[in-house]
Image 1 (cartoon, one colour):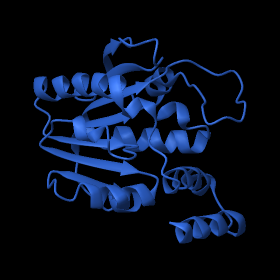
Image 2 (cartoon, rainbow, N blue to C red):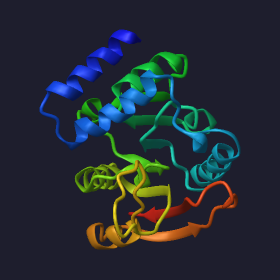
Image 3 (cartoon, rainbow, N blue to C red):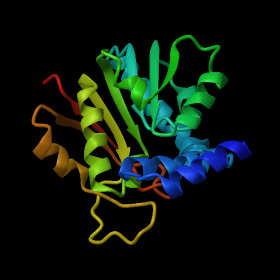
Length: 213
């Protein structure tokens, strides 16, 4: 563990890092210090998201699901899906999930490098509690492209949908992502929006897009 943290530290200090590398460093550092994916991936909110997503999977006969920003995998453990693939910017947590969930043959975890070598097209793409952590515009746009290009059927986003007038340097930056989708993904139609049933715990809400309309 100590060795991994030293390697990451020196990469951060001495390499010419692009925006993706900096973001990766932040999450690598969090996970190597035994951090989790956050409160939203545990407890009441975790169960709420799983209930919504599992019902959607059943109702729409989704057999393959990909999640961008799968984190420590705890949220995944609540999903009922024939084949799941989790992608995350942290190679450390992906490798940890590969080991932890190796006994589940239908649950796969891949790095972005591994994902880009895949040719699969998924029934459903998930983004859960990720968008408002994408504080850099370049990373945000890249993430949205990956999300919507991974499927020709459905996308489910669980996030805030408001706009920060000015970035204050924190790890949270709220965006009006529905406007971005309307402009950049003309084939995506918002078919359902659900306000959070636990709004006292989170201001994120569900947005479901149909790409096969």
